[in-house]
Image 1: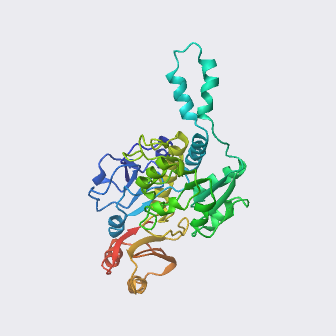
Image 2: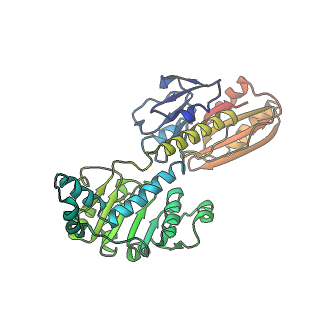
Image 3: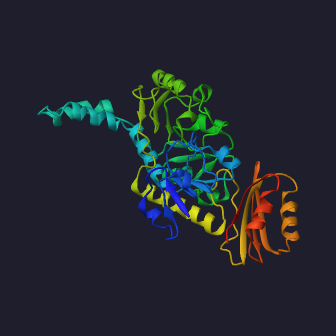
Length: 386
């Protein structure tokens, strides 16, 4: 098996590949690929490519539908960089509530003043702020990062409201019982002194922090955005900052709208830029690829359903990547039956227009069987896993 890295990937992850995996710099020759931020939308996808693993959470740099159409499974690494982002969100809250950057700038500007210590006692009142203890934080999106932020804020003495209409069972188990789960985002807007957003960028979430949403927020609110800049109508946000409606806007995505704008604290996309996050993402991404190649299992895919049958103990296992259309299961089971092959175990999962099947067999799979299965209408890839 050949793998390629479209961006530098932490060595602690790449070291997990067994000896039978060989690194190649030629994308066209790769069976699997690892990527971080490389733009893939204009890339030609190799016919032999089985999977792509994004060492991070966001996948807007990957052509998901194009990959799905070619039977290429795309993975990401949710939660692997969550702690790094959580810590920066907390730093953002503190930077916004206390004018720390303004104070540091004043010291730098007055570094040649021999009486700077005395001058600082007079100047510091211009940088006075407020504490976060006792304030109300609204967390929009209780995924891996949102839960960590909410729990940390509780520990810091904040009142925390959480909104997530798609709250997962895992998140529900992990979030503090002191976090109040509200049923509408409007409750977050009207009640909170701080608002932090942690949702994926979708058509339904793009621009969700709109001019109208901002208008419904408390006067002097602090808004933090460590998810994606386009979740916020930033032109409206800058207007609200200039008018004093919003006290501070902390964002981790520099652009010409917010850079240098009044009361904007713009960070150069440092959310997951820690050694630990990069290591965690690399390890998780490589493990996902290995499990897919070796066992056919899918975990944390963003364009195909998660599907697992554990380690294969049967004589053979085949993986079928196909369209989610009627009669597909009956067609491939008929092909196996006509070939006199017994199915010892199987599973089928679907997600939107696409589906995935794993089948364990009592006899070895052959190239002839692969050819017959590949001929089924809507079949995208057939692979002998074992």
